[in-house]
Image: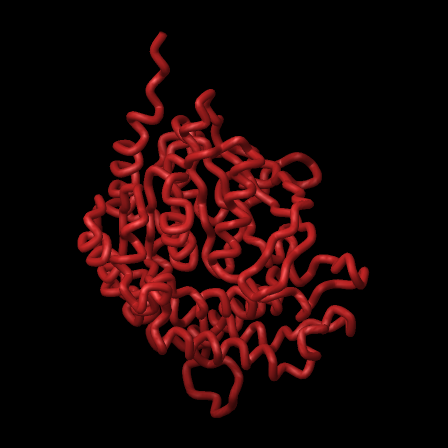
Length: 390
C-alpha cells in the first residue's frame, strides 16, 4: 500500500505481551506454571474502564485484528488485520467509542505460549507435549488478561465461529463480567459432521512423514503436506458452493484436458495456493490443538443437554448472527442458541444475513451484517459511555 493509511483505520499498531506467573490449571488435568499472551488494543480505555470490547478469534486467527503492522522502515505493511473491515473509527466496532482488545489464544503460534514455545522443563519447544486446551481454558486466561488490564466488566465480547463459542462460554462462566455477547456464525457444540472434518484434517497432519509424532521441530522439519491438506479441506468447508462456482466455475488453465494429475482447473490452483500459504504462517500442532478444542466444546453437557438451563446463569444481552449459505455452522445452529436463550428468559436479538460467502461471510463487511453489529453495540454502549455526573 502507499504511505497513506485509510482515515477509518486504527493506524499502525504494536502488539503487547502480558506475562503470567500464577499457574493456570487446565481442564485436561495439567497446568501451566507460567505463560504469556500477546495482544493488541485499539482506542482508549475510559476512566471508568466501562468501554472495553474483547475480540475472540476463530480457528486460524490471531491477535492482529485491525490496523497495520509497521515494517523495518516504519511504513505500514500492505495487509491490515483480519477484521479491519469491522474495527476502527466510525466502523461497526467503533474505536472512537470503545477500547478494543484482541489476543492470540493460549496454545497459538503467533506469540502466545503454545507448542512452538520453549518448555521450561526441557528447554526445547513444547511440540506435541503442550497440553490440550479447551474453550473454558481460553476464557479463564482471557479473564486473567482483563484483570491485568484493569477491566472488571466488558461492554461486549465478540467472536465468530470458534470465537463465538468463547463468547458463549464467557456468558456462562463469568456472567457478571460482560454487558453484551455477540456470537457470529457459531454453534452450541459441533455436529458429528464437523467433528469428522476435524478428524480428517488431523489425520492428514499426523500421517505426514515429517510430523514425527508432533516433535518435528526437534527434527528440523515441518509437516507441510499434511498441514496444507488440512487447510485445503477446511477452506472448502468455509466457502459456499455458489461462491466457489461464481469465483471459479469450471475454468481451466488449458484449452483441452491434459490427462495428468497436474493443475487443470483454476479451483485446484486456488486450493493448493491456500494450503501452501497456510503452512508458512501456522503451526501444525496448534492446528490440531485448536480443532480438538472445537470438538470438546459442549457447555450443555453439564446439564444433560439442556442448554437453556446452562444459559440461565447469563446476565448479558445477546446478539446472534448467522449467514444463509454457511453450511459449516448453519443458521439452524445459531437458532438453537437463540431458542435456548428465549426459553431461559434472556434478552436476545437475532439476524440471519443473506450472503453468498458461506462460513467466511463473518469476515466480510456485508452492509446488513455491519449495520446490525453497529446498531447493537451503539445501543449497548450508550449507558456505559455517559460521562459521570458531579
